[in-house]
Length: 268
Image (cartoon, rainbow, N blue to C red; front, side, top):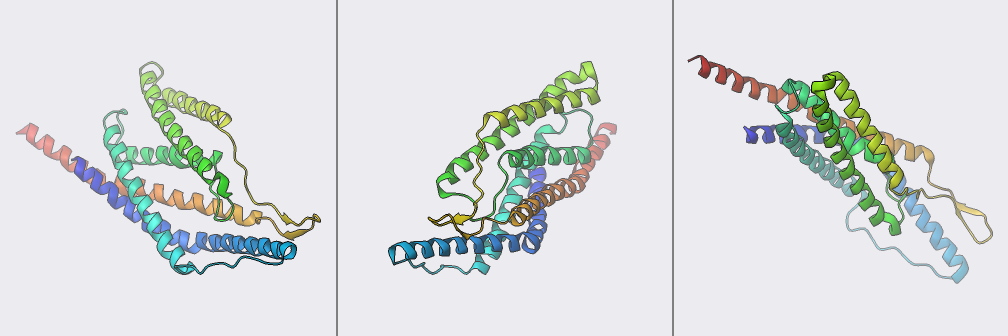
């Protein structure tokens, strides 16, 4: 039974990865291209300033792979691998939660688990540490930002599990609806406290100025930053929505057939 659940989770993740890649290829890749162009422009401006002050500049080495290959193959592999991994993780969470969170159908549980994982693993961490396009992160803060983001993901996931458990414990006293509201509120409060405690990193590149204070290269466009984060959110929404719906459609058949077989065996 567990193998069937994991297999359907992997299948749902693969389908989600393909759909998310198509969306990212159409909408997200152009924004990433403009961010890379910004990085190239920043490097050229730095070299021009160095040449003006020291009389020489440093040349750039050629790329091992073209930008087209990097964007298509790299993005496609990354999105697909992420979606398949999330599909497998989703299936594990579903298998653990099934039969332990009240009288909820398999389809509804699939949707609820997908929504909870989307919120706890992406939305909440992104509110504290929003995704940035290439060329907008400082090399000195990449490791710190990555560790803080992973910490936020882990804490958010743990708090979500704790909130679900807390709500289940309160259900006999408050009823399912009120217990769900209390559990959700406790999660929001705990997440808010964590966001206040963890440090904030703000590293969006501003305008580049020379020694005279004259702007020689503009800062990163706010429109590109907005579009990158919007399309990244939409890509994640596609991944989790597809996983939840595809898994719900496929797992219901497995559980229904198992239930029918059990009923037939009991009647005989």
